[in-house]
Image (cartoon, rainbow, N blue to C red; front, side, top):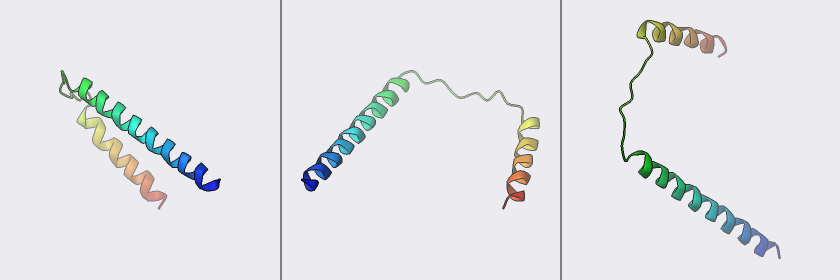
Length: 62
């Protein structure tokens, strides 16, 4: 009995993984049909100080 339940569980997980993979592949295929380039709207004068602040915060906790 336990073996049958385990097998059913493994099969259901496998089916879910297959469904997620198929959905991901479908999304990628649909999204890549007409791609648009990424354009950053962030200013580098704000990004660099922010990353430096974050580094200091993280370094203080380790």
